[in-house]
Length: 288
Length: 336
View (cartoon, rainbow over the protein chains, first blue to last red):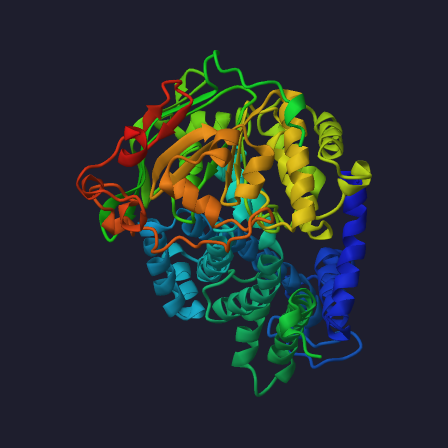
């Protein structure tokens, strides 16, 4: 089978897998696709400019003109939520990808090399895990200053440790398997053994964990933006919008509610998808 | 079996593998203990040497020492040389060893069920073994993989390349392992109990495949087993190991007709046979612990021929009948 053929088979295989996880997986997947679609085509979907201020329209409740109302600068909440999806997804995806890559590499090396190195890595990981992720993110963001790159790095740091753990455990188990010894007897180098023979055994676990932790990353991003350590205004972010709305919560309920629902929907979608994939791949955790 | 068709081992030529006084040590409770002691072996071109002995006699450790596949932190080669193609493998760097493993010396293992990567198609695994050492294209490697599968007797090889290891039976998987091992036409194949996990009919098939490949490529083979029945089928010479030492080396026919070392004799008596009416005789006692190797003959405690000197002095592996063909490590027998 050629690589191209295999690529064409991949979506089919994914669909079959998702079906095994039940309908909730499809709901999560559809919801996530809708949010991604919204983020990608924000320019054409959003009815208004997300940044342009118009004092005449300030704090308007939801109406046919402004479906989800306007904020204290007269900006359309719906448009800001649509553009905010970009920041949330960008931060969520890139921080998780960074955490996933570095965590997997460090975890595999730790498990494969073992000994003192493994002990050291595990000690550092335990310390990192003992901090609540929000606190750790807060520290990193506060030290490095608020910008979107720093936010991504801060969140990646908070989610690095679980991936190290996740990659290390199967590495420890697999490196003792006979086929690794057989590979050594065939003259394979350590890098080849790790990438070709150990990594594929855990890739599905890591991707599932990735989708579950992406929800946490998006939540952390919203939390950090909420306390003002995220992306600077006037850029629209869900966390930032919730904070601004929080100040006017009694007069203008729509300001905090709708961005909160957006965060909620995204986190829900990712969790449904991740759970369904986990159930589909791990028959032990599947409910009968 | 096919003994007649195999060319006689090239005795006069330089040996393929020449092990000199190999000593392999394991770290046990903070102390280095020898599991392989003063092992010297030569394997000639197109020769099959069987290494037999009980579990824990050091036969696998000897084979693993040759490729330095021992666990690095708890084991080491304490002394000795392993000469292969003009190089001493015992002192070679990991990098140079990697060029030899799978390429010039290959190894197959006992457990065919777990010796293949479950996440990779069989065809890819064989191709990988080829491409690790030879600069060939993917398509060529694939073609070679198909030929290799045919050679080891797997029907409809082209289709089976696409299968995963779990779609193969134990015997078929061992054939795949053999295909991977011979992919680069090694000069030497180390077979560590390759048929132990297989049932008897499959065992015979796998042995036939190995014997055929050996005569086709003029490959030498070290065949590790505790099954003396298998030895009779495949080996040219036999080295019997006990407690990390070689106690007897003999041509396979001589060993069966006239075992010299009392341990060899006891091993043969412990083997069930139809042509004998007496009961199978188990060997009394057990192998001495690694931490408690006696200073005299290691077998003395279990030996029916024991003399006072056996417990004091350590016997050497000495040639008997002056031909340099038979060696035995026994005071009583070599004195005769």
